Every structure is written in C-alpha cells, then in structure tokens.
Image (cartoon, rainbow, N blue to C red; front, side, top):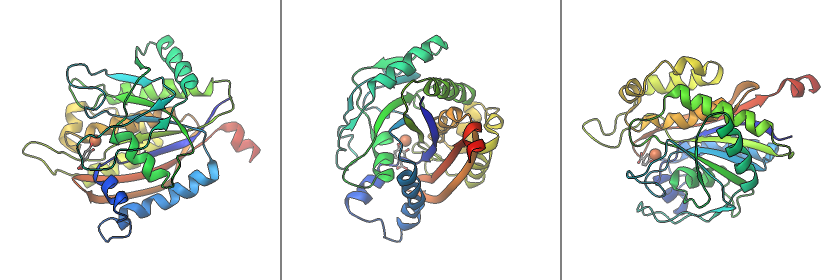
Amino acid sequence: MATIIGGIGSTHVPAIGKAIAEKKQNDPYWKPFFKGFDYVHYWLARTRPDVAVVFYNDHGLNFFLDKLPTFAIGAADEYRSEDEGWGIPVSRPIPGDAALSWHLINALVADEFDVTTCQDMLIDHAVTIPMALMWPGPVWPIKIVPVEINTVQHPLPTLQRSLRLGRSIGRAIESYEKDLRVVVIGTGGLSHQLDGTRAGFINKEFDLLCLDKIVGDPETLTRYSIHDWVQESGSQGVEFLNWMAMRGTLTGRVTELSRNYHIPISNTAAATVVYDNQKETARKAA
Ligand code: DHB
Ligand code: FE
C-alpha cells in the first residue's frame, strides 16, 4: 500500500527562480532563505519519495478569472509550464502519475468532493519554484499529482474545507494498492499582500501562530473566516489554504522536523517546513 512519509511547506515567490538562475544562493539577501532547504535536501535524500502530491494555487496560467475551479486535480503523464511574464526561465516539464491521479479522483468524488479533472494542465511558479528548491539538481527524481485550490477569486473555500480536502486525499493515498512512498507539499504564503493600499503587508506574529498551530492543532486555525485571514495575513496570505490541505493528509503522529522563517523574500514572509508523519505500526516497529 502507499504510505505518506510526511509533508513539506514552501513559499513559491517567482523571484526565487531568478536567484536560482543567477546562482545567488549565497548572496546576503538570499542565504538565510536558501539555508532553510539544507534539511529538506537531507530529508528527501533519506526518505526518497516516489510521488509528490502538490497543493498549490494557479495564478492565471492554466485557469483565469472567467473559469476558476475551487478544486482541480491533474490527471496527466506530464505537466508543462510556460512563460508567466516574471522574467524567469521556463521550467522543465514534470512527469505525472496519472494512475494515482485517477485513484484520487475516484475517491474524492465518492467522498463528495466534486473536483475538476484536468488531463491537460499547465503548472505555474507555485509548483515549479518549490520543485527547484527541493530538488536543486538537473533531474527531478519524482512524479507529481498537482491539486489546485482557488485562493485567487472570491468566494474561496474555507480553511475547514481545505483541511477536509486534505484528509480525504490522505485516506485515498493510503488506500492505493501500489507500494508508493508519497510526500505531500503545500505551497505559497505565508503572510503577503501584493496589491492595494496594504501592498507589502506582513504579519510575523500571525505567521508564527500559524506555524505553531498547524502541527498539532490545525482545527484551531479553521475558526478564522477567509475575511479574518485576509485581515491577519494579507490578500495573498490565503495561500495558506494549500498548507492546510497538506496538513490534512497527514493522519499519523505529526511532528515538525525543520522550520525556517525569513522576512522578506520579495513581498512575502517566506517559510519552509518539514513534517514527519509517523504511523502507529511504524512507531511500534521502531
Ligand atoms: C510574490 C508572492 C507570490 O505568492 C506570488 O505568487 C507572486 C509574487 C512576491 O512576493 O513577489
Ligand atoms: Fe502566490
């Protein structure tokens, strides 16, 4: 059976792609951010996942405001990216695991999550930047299943709904008959606002509360409405919905293995975390 080995949370700011292209990882501005990935690289080398389920929000590359699903899931053998206009190199394509996608889609619809299924889907910086951060080498040794959550055009799903989507996908992964090792990734955030009179808004106190609570008590965070969240975290801080879904998939004993929090990267409070997901049986055997 497939197992969920753990979760990773990662910011997806496009400027990171430019820093990677220009090899600026050790520049004073970038170093404190890139250092946060040392543990991620160590952990991925040790745990060697086969597939990554990636919760992210599309920013207008595959979906636009005329048609924007609340939840969409890729069901392709390969995902391409395109130039989004950020001035960064277009990412290499990423292989998909279409068989796992269809298993998840069947389980989600049976569980009353009526997701949009995409057999052709462009992925944007919210997938490709975290991939480049997690696997900095010339090859990405992993297949993906991308899961899009609308964080762009209101009404957005609630934090509770996102957590439940994650739980449903977690149960579905664990009922998959192949012996796959699955890592679940949530991208975006933490606090940031790119537009309007509060452009540049960051809330460190609220971000640290989120990072503390999401590990052992994510339910507490579901008490915030989306409008509360915009107030506390900025209009793009709602990308935390992707983190809530990631957390929802982790059904074992969840512990924080690593955390890096750094302000600012571009307009964003950047956070990188790794969560362990220890199952009861694995704990007994240990
Ligand atoms: C920035 C942050 C984002 O989440 C994004 O999607 C684009 C840009 C930024 O801080 O520049
Ligand atoms: Fe974003």
